[in-house]
Each structure stands twice: as C-alpha cells, then as structure tokens.
Length: 87
Image 1 (spheres, rainbow, N blue to C red):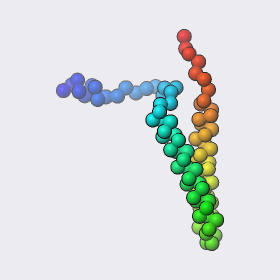
Image 2: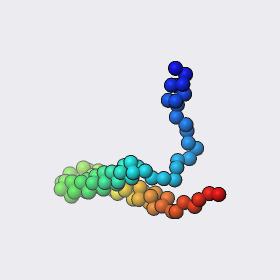
Image 3: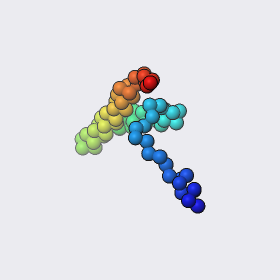
Image 4: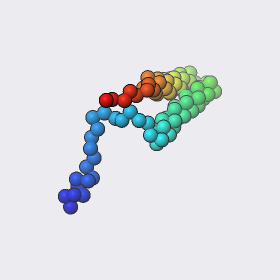
C-alpha cells in the first residue's frame, strides 16, 4: 500500500523542460486559434451593432483577444532561441 502512495506522488520540477511536446504544440495552436476567432467575431458583431454601449464593449473584447494573441506569439518568439548544451 505504501508503494502505491509513493508512486502516485509526482516529482516537482524546479523549472519546466526546454521542450515543446506535440501535445503542447497542439494546445498552443488551439489557444492562438481561439483568440483570433474571438477577436474576429467580436469585431464583426461590434460593426453590426447599433447600441453604442454594446458596440464599445464588443470592441474592447476584440482588442483584449488581439492582445492575448500577440502576447502568446511574443512569448513563443522570445523563447524560440536555440538551446545550448550544458557540459
């Protein structure tokens, strides 16, 4: 019984690995797609809206999703440097 509880405990990594797995890549692609789609949809609906308060809120939502999209991209680009092997 004690072996099972020891095996179920996960080791905490002090720093994440410098690797992006296929699963990570798929999730990152999904995050980018979700933000881009939400930005486009909210912008489209803001253009169709006649109520100025709703239009303003939708434009704010669109800008927020664009910022999130850009933040994800900039994070990926800043961390996309070759890893030097340690000796």
